[in-house]
Length: 152
Figure 1 (cartoon, rainbow, N blue to C red):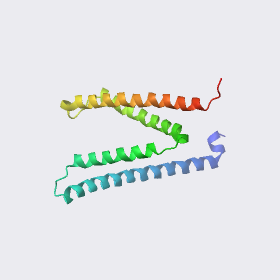
Figure 2 (cartoon, rainbow, N blue to C red):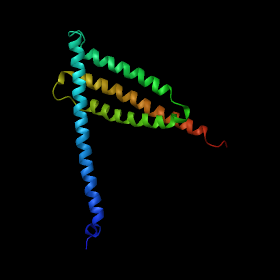
Figure 3 (cartoon, helix red, strand yellow):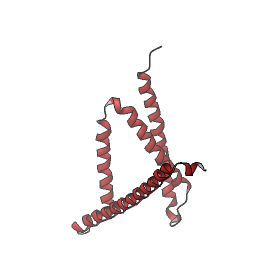
């Protein structure tokens, strides 16, 4: 008797987990497709509503600037007790940025080799800024945790 056939309840639970994971993946794919459609529809609507006066680049730049303001106010309204967990999340996000920046620096563009140097420059800048953010986050987190340690 094999261990897998010894527990049919475990097999059934594993199969249900696989089915649930597949359903979740399909739902995530559908949500991404809806988000992509909504973004392109909003861009097209803004372009059409202004008679083509708003360039899609300017539209996306405006969204980016608004996101910067929202991020600024969200971060500065965090209480000091939540600062260390927030820094941990920020370090995790910056580590993902470092991976993307390394890809931008190291991988040449396949389609348009004439503009590959722009991607490498921006990737290098992103790598530097994200690295500063990660190491600064560790320093601030270490200092915050030192405030709670007993004095010697």
